[in-house]
Length: 174
Image (cartoon, rainbow, N blue to C red):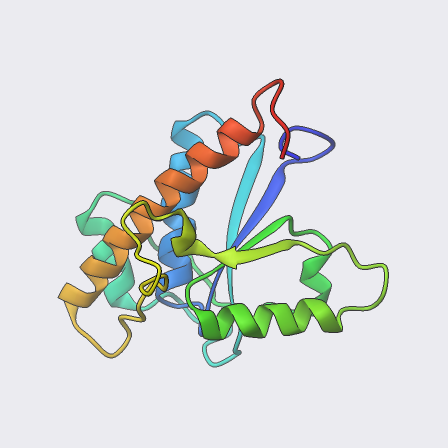
């Protein structure tokens, strides 16, 4: 998939697109750039709800990113819609509720619409347990919750990128 006709397009998804998914997109974009894979993989983020559409990321999310050396700012929240699906290859959801919402959206897309892979982001976290496979929503918490969430996102995105690069190596099949 990577490097065929167009870059692989990855979407990070949470509920409102102001905390987890913008943090995951920022980390993943930077890791992609550091790996020299910017022409092969693009990363964006969405929410399954339109609560914050057009608004910036939560200030606490941006602050956590900045404290840990990741790019922040310039985010505008947006909702994932059926018309977005045809250009996406992989959708990574923060939690099971959003996973279910995205899968419903994919099932309801018009016939013939390309179907992206839809998974949990944390399935790439080497420290995730079977019963702990979600990226917790830090929205109701403080800086500590945002830091903990970002640590999970960092591990997951590093493993994700390694998987994508390995899957695209010559002689490997997806």
